[in-house]
Image (cartoon, rainbow, N blue to C red; front, side, top):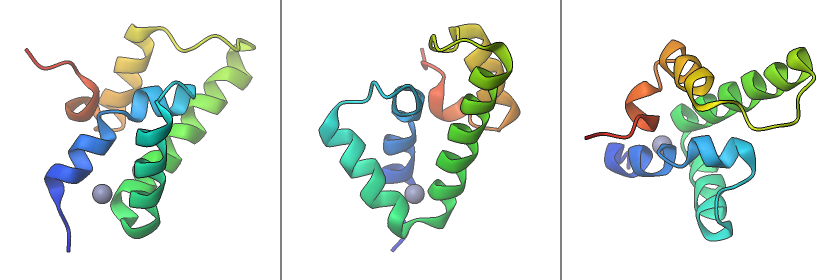
Length: 86
Ligand SMILES: [Zn+2]
């Protein structure tokens, strides 16, 4: 069964996940989820790859600045997942 709300909930932690800063329990939840959810797997794989390319290209190991990250996620059409909604 596909549960969009669950996807959204998990992808809201994606930004921390690719930084390796997501708490362990959420990390495991996300990894279990993408094992069964191809849509989210693509999103996670794409983001992880893009972030590692960023690090390779910039030579920085620091987390991506928030504004760069937000632009990236907007490009990937992930803005809705990662933007802090007000
Ligand atoms: Zn999903």
